[in-house]
Image (cartoon, rainbow over all chains, first blue to last red; front, side, top):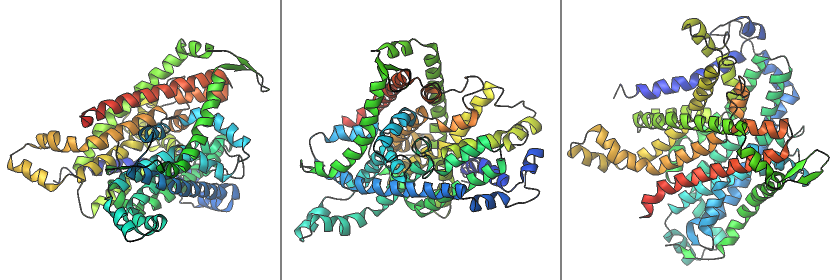
Length: 265
Length: 287
């Protein structure tokens, strides 16, 4: 037993190393970084973080990202819930084809869609808005949300629906007060995955925004190329992008392992 | 049993409209470009299938496609077995389970460009932890801006770091769903650990592993941001994967026609491989 637990420990150490290095860098001065190798920050500084929290172009990057990610999660879950219910409870014309077609949208490389997306969202007047990024990310998040929710819903016996109707519940009331609470783990897992894929995606978010809705990732790329390679600042910005994900994952920690197991292929 | 109900379409309608808006219109734009030539100013000339012919015969495309298959093949060959091994050796219950899960899922929640930047900082020859360890402590000459081998090793390590946890989480989900009775039965029969794995755990994990391989295939085949930030496709063209080449053609040279044709072929390959794999893996279940 003892020997076996070594494997996860080594693996987690391997995962933490680059993260440690990023965090350590963020507390170093530019001088120290460029002057040579040091395992721990010698002159501990918070200047990099101070810069980010006082400069609007930096902290607005975070706010923008959080706005469109939240918007996307809400839209994806809201439209995926009824659709997943339909797939799990009813047979209808073209249901299997539709399900597979939805999944194929996850296979399209974002690079393929970058330019057409730019033109499409410019044409409908949404360019450089949070809504544009939120809607664009629906392309790969809605299929995933439908897939996960459908798995959870199929695990709820159909008798629950029928009993509720016999008791005189209307469909909306049944759905909200009885059905939703019984799949709340599924909603949590689906929301987690939507948040995750929207938070980490950069190519589309960058293509669809210019100033008003610019994501943090785009601010970082600009710094990396223009401001004479301020590694400490870049590391601090990177460290801060890990935090929202870490918070979200802490809340769903007990459900993640179950999340996909219930989904069907 | 599911009931037949055509009204279910109304439930699906919002999803259909949103995804169609995002998928069909851009796809039509791409198809439209792929048969035309432009010199800017929105002037287009019809070119028929020329771009497709040109692309299928081009050395550059073959090379990028070859690199792409090599990359996807290597990371699948590492991540799938490694993910299974780690999932098998994880604790099944107790305090450490959520700790392991949270720590392991962390890399997946870091924005992709930050992943690239992080590994860049990590691998800098003189001042990065990895670069320093390699060059100074171990005495191996390691610089990914110079040596294609070092660049490849770094992007593969990065992807293993980034995505093995997905395989672990999925395999683990499959493992914890096996009832205890199965293990007890195996114990009574005196089955070896290998036999338990081969005849109990592996079949039970088949479904989640199918999802894992499919997701890893699709996402690694479409990978763009991380290697682009890490190596920029270099040194030379050695790590220019398919997506990176595509963006170079489309946005760098603004050759919309060839880029669109390439997009379509690219998408078709992803679709074909995914479909083949999906059909093969689910064939037994249908019987």
